[in-house]
Each structure stands twice: as C-alpha cells, then as structure tokens.
Length: 352
Image (cartoon, rainbow, N blue to C red; front, side, top):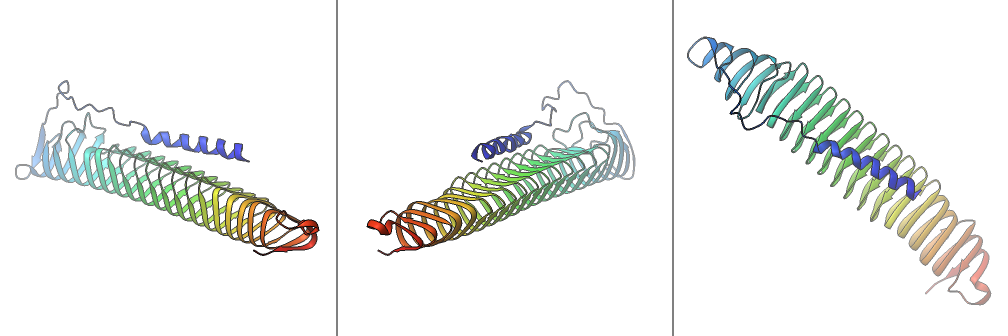
C-alpha cells in the first residue's frame, strides 16, 4: 500500500511542472521590431472609430494585427495575433483570433486564445487557452487550458487543465487536473486530480486523487486517494486510501485504508486497515487496526495496539502492550496484566 501511494504522489506532483512552463517568448528587446502606426480615424484625434494600427486610442478600433500599441480603451477587434505586446494595455472589450496585451482588462474573447504578458482582469475566454504571464483575476475560461504564471483568482476553468504557478483562489476547475504551485483555495475540482504545492483549503474534489504538499483543510474527496504531506483536517473521504504525513483530523473515511504517519483524531472508518502512531476518538477498521497509542474506541477484527490502549476495543483478536480499559473479543491480550490474566477469552480489563 505504501509503495503504491508513494508512486501516486510522484506522478501527481509531476503534473505541477506544467505551472512552470514559459508560454511567452516575446522579448522585451524590441529594437529589431519596426511597427508602423498608420490608421484611418473617424472622429476627434485619438478617439472615435479607428481602422489600422493606432498606437493610443479611445473608442472602436479595428486592426488586422497589433504591433507596438500602448493604450487602447473601448472595443478592440483584431484579426491576427500581435507581433509583440510589451508595454501594451487594452481596457474594455477585446475580440479576435488571440487578443493579447501586457495588461488586459474587461471582456476578452479569443477565437484561439487570450494572452496577457503581465495581468489579466475581467471575463477572459479563449477557445483553446487563456494564458497570463502574471496575475489572472475574474472569470477565466480556456477550452483546453487556463494558465497563469502568477496568482489566479475568481472562477477559473480549463477544459483539460487549470494551472497556476502561484496561488489559485476561488472556483477552480480542470477537466483533467487543477494544479497550483502555491496554495489552492476555494472550490477545487480536477477530473483526475487536484494538486497543490502548498496548502489546499475549501471543498476539494479529485476524480482519482487529491494531493497537497502542505496542509489540506475542508471537505476533501478523492476517488482513489487523498494524500497530504502535512495535516489533513475536515471531512475526508477517499475511495481507497487516506494518507497524511502528520495528523488526520475530523471525519475520515476510506474504502480501503487510512494511514496517519503521526496521528488520527475524530471518527475514522476504513474497510480494511487503520494505521497510525496515535488514534483518538472512534476508530472502525473492519479488517485490521495497527496503532501505537489508542484513546477512545476501536472496532476491528484485529486490534493491534503496540503501545498504550486507553478505552475500549472490540474485535475477534485484541492485543495491547499496556491496557487501561477494556478488551472485548474471542482472544484478548493485555501484556501489562499479571499471570493468567494476560490472555483471556471474551473480556479482558485493566485500569490504572
């Protein structure tokens, strides 16, 4: 089981490398790029209706391909991707094959993609992808992918993947995966996986797995596994396994096994096995519970307490090194009892 889980963690965390990809080859050195700012304007200078590559404009603007623009306010319609976007800003409504600027604010609709070099704000939709080299805020939708090299906030949806190189906040949905190289906060859904290099907080769903490098807190559901490198807290439900490198707390349910390398606290149910250094609360593992220290109630076919049991265990076979409570089962072993009372059928007890 542990080898399978380690493999799963390795595969899923490799997905986070998507968040480190550089989607921007545009150079800040524009000395080799010559842009002509010719346009036909209907209206006062710098405003009204423009046809051509106007550099600064307020109003309705039509252009085949933007090159070296500075600031456009209003409605900007371009038929082709720009030559470069360094230092550009578009505010309002942008539409075209690939609306692009260093800063995009407003409603941005791309037949292929929407791309920003620094920041994207508003309603952003790209049929193939919505991509920002900096922050992305608002409603962000990419038919295949939504990707931000900085923070991503709002409603973030990628048909295949939603990826942030920093934090991701809000409603975050990836058809295959939602991946954050920072914290993942809000309502987080990945058709296969949700992966966070830092904390994962909120309502978290992974069709196959949820994986967090740090704490995972909230309502957590993984079709196969939930894995946290630190604490796992809340309502935690997994089809096969729940695994935490530190403490599992709350309502913890696994179709096969719960593994808390440090502790498990609250209500714990596993169809096959519970394994933890310390368990506090109610523990039910139909097959086998292997616990170092137990405080509370444990129900399993085999309760193996390698340290101290404080409370009640119920099973077919029960064993503890140090009993301070009651064992109920066919065979009950309390190694701190004297003489024949170390091993008793049906009931054994010891109280300090």
